[in-house]
Amino acid sequence: MRYLLILFLMTITSTACSGPSEDKWTKQRPQTFPASGTVTFKGAPLEGATVIFRSNSGEPQAAVGRTDQEGKFQLRTFEDGDGAIAGEHSVAITCVKTEGPPEGANLDEANVVIKETSLIPQQYGDPKKSGLTATVVPDQENQFTFELKEKK
Image 1 (cartoon, one colour):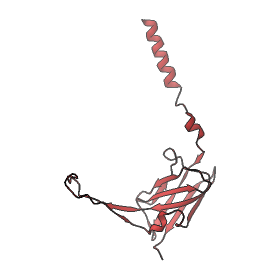
Image 2 (cartoon, rainbow, N blue to C red; image 1 turned 90 degrees about the horizontal axis):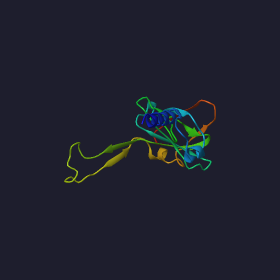
Image 3 (cartoon, rainbow, N blue to C red; image 1 turned 180 degrees about the horizontal axis):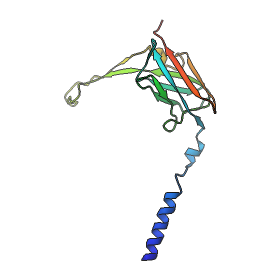
Image 4 (spheres, rainbow, N blue to C red; image 1 turned 120 degrees about the horizontal axis):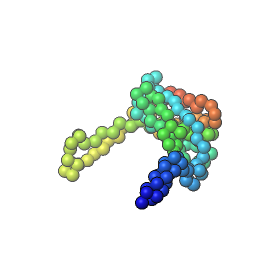
């Protein structure tokens, strides 16, 4: 009995000390590099915007970040803060205000209407029409500033 207990404790200890293991999906991921920045609209920080970096090299993974009250964002591709894949990217930025039924409304009885209003010109939400680009470079500080303007 004592032998089984010692064996059990050794198994748990060796498993706990071995650290996280990488699976084949993690090993096949393209390398990412930290990338962050700031978004302003009409000269003021843009809070609550979603920033999307789409690789121009055809990589299917996009990097995404959300701006805080100071307009600052940090990109993530696979894990929080891991950044973006190296290379040139087309950038899209959206910022939407969503209005729905009042809090506490019985959704079974109400005609649920959700209204979304873009707080910035919608062209910025399309990476092909936004006119925004960024190049992520390995082992450099990838800090980007996007100064959005009212549509002309």
